[in-house]
Length: 95
Figure 1 (spheres, one colour):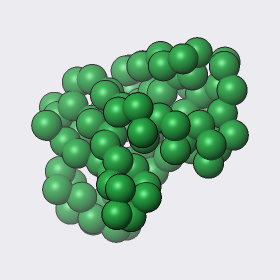
Figure 2 (cartoon, helix red, strand yellow):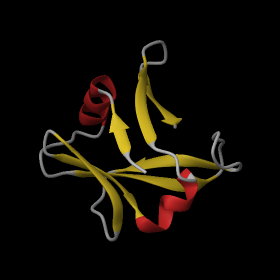
Figure 3 (cartoon, one colour):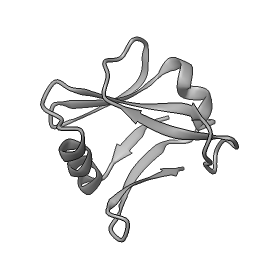
């Protein structure tokens, strides 16, 4: 399992969350919503430091991560964070 973030999505997060070098962004499973990997759950995003990171991706000094206790959500898939230009926001793909 890996995290991939396209440059446009990275820039969006950097601006929206006011990220700077040394900051952390967590992708986590949350109850509610929908996804194509887990019914009744969706992916949340929060600016916080890791406790027990299972997967990390460093991009321009900013660390994106998934905690060990959230790996079940991905069901063995990689997380690809792409950018939807029509909606002007990141979208999540699971491959």
